[in-house]
Amino acid sequence: MAAEHVRTQIRKAITAALTGLTTAGDRVFESYPHPLQDKDLPGLKVDTVLPGQINPGSMGGKARLLERQLLVSVTACVKQNAGYQDVVDAMLLEAEIALANDNTLGGLCKWIRPFTEPGFDTAPGERTSQAATQVFEVVYVTALNAPNVPR
Image 1 (cartoon, rainbow, N blue to C red):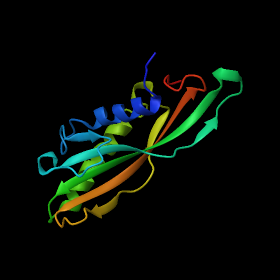
Image 2 (cartoon, rainbow, N blue to C red; image 1 turned 90 degrees about the horizontal axis):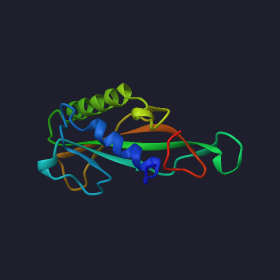
Image 3 (tube, helix red, strand yellow; image 1 turned 30 degrees about the horizontal axis):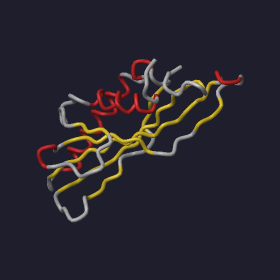
Image 4 (cartoon, helix red, strand yellow; image 1 turned 90 degrees about the vertical axis):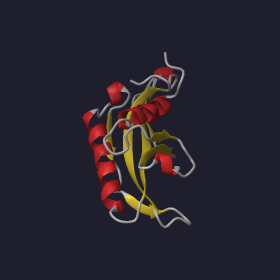
């Protein structure tokens, strides 16, 4: 039995699924709250967006199933002026395809889908740092007494 909450397992699995893509390569950072350094660009940041929803999936004591919704943000970061939207769009396209190709993350979840269109943002104080974030919805199921085991 895994010691980590399924939410943590999912975030790590998404980070792994996005590592090695054409544009970002191995520059994929999980739960990284700081701006990326020049050496890490172009790069992706993966974070969970709280709160998600939890709905009863079945009745029955401690083994009751819970259907959970987790929102995961994937932020594509670049440092350039000309053509930055094209590079960011390419990175998020690669991420969307990678997640669609393993839509259950090897059985950790029921499915993943894009939840929002990417939103662009210029880093404060930086005219050449650009980023766009796309949020993905992940639906997974656990038992009430075992939030670390996917069902």
